[in-house]
Image 1 (cartoon, helix red, strand yellow):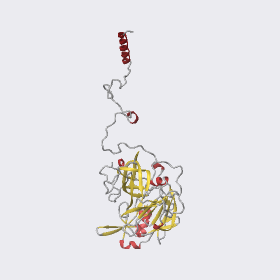
Image 2 (tube, one colour; image 1 turned 135 degrees about the vertical axis):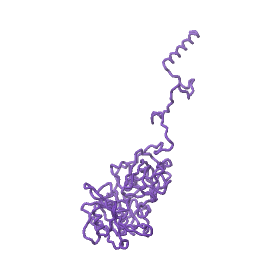
Image 3 (spheres, rainbow, N blue to C red; image 1 turned 45 degrees about the vertical axis):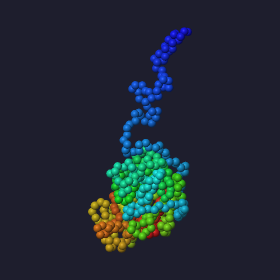
Amino acid sequence: MNLPLAAVLAFTLISLCVAQGKKIPLSQGKRSDWKPPGAVRRPWTASLQQPWPLPIRPRQQLFPKQPRPFEKPVQPDKPLQAPKEDYGVTSLARDVKLTNYKDKVYHCQVEIGTPGQKFNMAIHTGYPASWIPSVHCPPEYTLSSHYYRRYNNASSSTYRANGKEFTALYEDGEVEGYWSQDTLKVAGLKVRNQSFGEAVLEPNMFKDMNIDGVLGLRPRAAFEGEELTVMDNMVRQKLLPAPVFSLYLNRFDSEDRDSVLTLGGTNTDYYTGEFVVAPLTRPNRWQFKIDGVQIANHSGVFSKSGCHAELDSGTPLILGPIEEVNIVHLQLGGIPLQGWPRTFLFDCAKVDSLPDLEFIVSGQKLSISSKDYIIKEYKDGEVSCYSAVEGMFWRKDETPVWVLGTAFMRAYYTLFDVGNKRIGFAKAKH
């Protein structure tokens, strides 16, 4: 074959290749940044993660821009183990100092994240979840005087995104945000992968109380989600000697020692005598049966048979069925005030002589004095005395419940037995 004929055949083969749409590698005669007219170069990650083109997002947004992958906490093979009968203080139990704000709320300092970000969190035995304000919370929503104390997940190396919405309902409003996970530190204990709510909308429920958020200590119900409570995680990560915690609450403006939350046991320095124990009547609440409520040295039990009570450190009051609350104040000599909730006034000169109020639990009388159920309020140089016991309405299909807040809990060192699902009371040392 002569040279002209070979050149003609080569030109013919190249023309056929181009006609059939065969591509020439970029490394052979084309620049790496070349693209045909009208084509769009797509990154290889576009087809794996999200549709192309990428939406343009504002620099400041409500939720994290690029959340890190969510890692579920390791579930144990064994269920929670019941604690020993000996609830004495142990070397492994941890005491957490609590601050009393005018007998209205008790809070402790908690660190969240790595490095730790500090928050004052109110202890709440009436709610299971914990939450703190987020940096994404709008400026008009301010929970406490700590305006700049807000959680920033971008500053924590142990943060894990959850992707679920968070909502907490309270009498004073609703807290909204999203679930997050991070390391929580309290009393030297490091709780890994702890779920909590990042609040972006919140009521001013603790305004001017030096509170940043809530530390939930109530057992979790099945319908409340899969996020583990702080106590659940502490037990599952084997940080506590027993699945229990206990509370000693002091009185404001008194010579009592500091309030204490003991994790993993009890502390004999804060109570005397034996515990009066009652089993829980609802597994997801600190609720138990009471045999009745009465006034010392007075005849008649005011609560009906089968009444229940619930311990709630989130309220400073004692709430009960309105009919029974009215009978109690009628015998105590309280003067009713108009409005809701109904409040009863007392003569401050006669407060010290008022009889004790007794709650009958497991056949034992748990009494509280007028120092506990009467609130003294100082305003403009004058003092007013009114009852901490207020009435609530219940539907006919509901079982009436007494809600025993910190006005009751100050009189008793209270044991919360998670493992054995029961509550215990011992006389507090004041």
